[in-house]
Length: 360
Image (cartoon, rainbow, N blue to C red; front, side, top):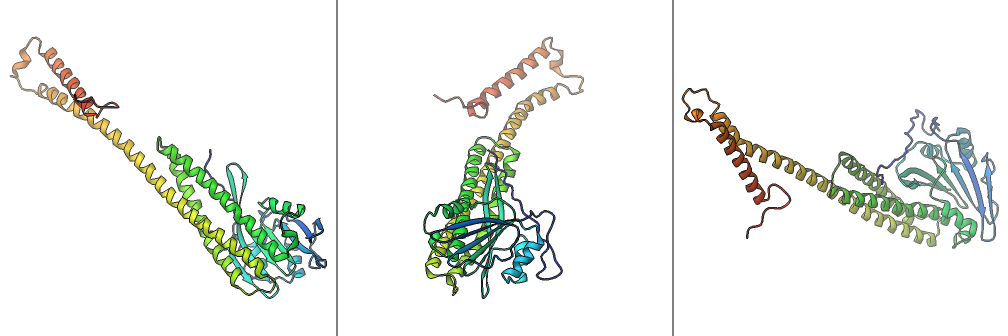
């Protein structure tokens, strides 16, 4: 299983004019879906212009789902249609932004981070911006594709209470669906950590160290996003906002608890990656020790052989043993006996082979 995680972030654009909407060539053209619903009816339309979308039918809640930010004209029209502050629209386009909540007179602006799985080995991090008004929610995504299909299905099938509630509950439902996928992301990271732990306990490769560092980096990045998310939800619960009811604030408190749980799991996984790194370094150290042990044993065996070869290789004229007829064979035999004897002794000590010879 691959452990490489791919995050596709758009570099933050720079503008010299505060509130200016700057579009880059990497940005995808917007796809706009408008969903109007109440308890009895739901209408879904794909639109190309946002003109007139502020006129929400009486008794309906409107969700304007915008996927893609690559059309400045559409964003300018939306800003004029809903009287959105220029700095808010700038934050929508300039990615990445810190998770936050801005409270204005007629709406709330939220920035969240979404993690969703494109395929088995590819998680994507994406910014989701939301504007919550009295009877509408506008969501902005960097591109098509998200983790909100289950929420749309609930709307279409009228499952749960979502069709009976107002725009504040829709905003909660979007945030809650995004936060639920944090657990899927953490489960994915946890699985990768467990697989690596099983592997590095037996054998280590250089690529494993890179994967460990990637996992730790991803957990640190997630934790960096979770802290402001916690603050953001705390603000939503405590602020007095006319178009967020007390009942929905109770649901946001549940989101707050989920984020706290996510933080605890993230911290635990981060500690596991630290332990995994220690295991990797320990196994590498043991491998190095084994190599040094083998080299030391070889050097130790050759030390007496080198001594004997050096002794009889000296350039003195009178060395008695040099006159022996069988001196060479005797010396070779002595060397062989020394080598074999040291080998047996090392094996008995358990320094060579899998086990030492047990003493009776």
